[in-house]
Image 1 (cartoon, rainbow, N blue to C red):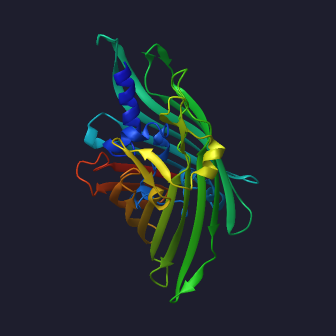
Image 2 (spheres, rainbow, N blue to C red):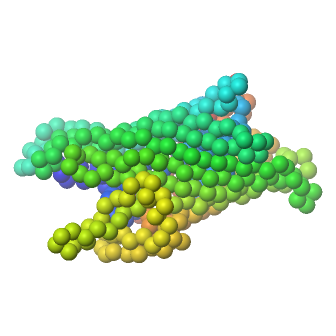
Image 3 (cartoon, rainbow, N blue to C red):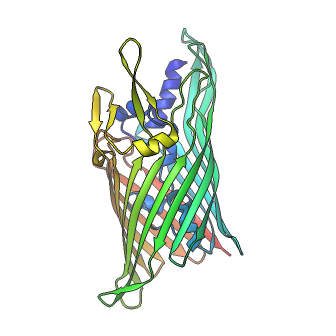
Length: 378
């Protein structure tokens, strides 16, 4: 049973990281599925969106973006996750927004990750049955304007993680649960002219998943949530005088704000345990020491950053082409890939598609495809 529990934990961590790093990531944060970029538009633009946030997926990227929206929308995204594993994993994201006069735009979402079916065994290897491992979160978000150009936003989600059941070493394994809070801001400039063409620039900031850690056994320490600080900008310009063709450049810089601290037990051995939520927010800017699966490594601040760059072309708000590039340091996740995407809009309907092309052979994220369908309504 211990083997199956560790397998579920490793699969959960491997959602974001390559196999050698996944083993090290298990002890740093729980529920890494909260970091999965849910919509195909942002995923097709190199995992960028904190400064765009102009559709229902603003709930993930930047809830302050809801304040600049007035059209109700429902969208669903589906992806067969980590297809290289062939492990029957899939990811679904349902999101909706609704505008209320005098209050503004309110958004809600449900995210579900299926981690497959596992076999329960006893210490001798005798099969005792089967169970499903999964993780789910649901929440509400709200954005409000402080001026015509600046807005704040927030969100609150409930998180439930069921990775295994039964006993491990005499300890009962239980589903883990927690709550996460988002705090966000978005600035959108007025249109200005560049080379006789209209342009705008946005800047966004989102601190997501602030909350207590999760534990799965009674005596285990809590693993922190993947609290992420994301900042970025987006520049949009018309390519012609009538605005039929537009181009957007985007860039997101993000960092996990969870942090382990080194402790020394009475026997003189070094141990690590997670910092508290508030403590980590203030103490995660220096050098990070971590075990990469083979040895202890030290990462400076620049090496801890995750970088995304995106490009999007629209023709007459009907058809879009997208591409992007995403990079993490090899000792801090080891994700590096190109993204491709496309979008169609017709009347109240829309479809977005994204594809990941990894630069490393046999990477778990290779050939990941996301498909999003959306409906706008009044």
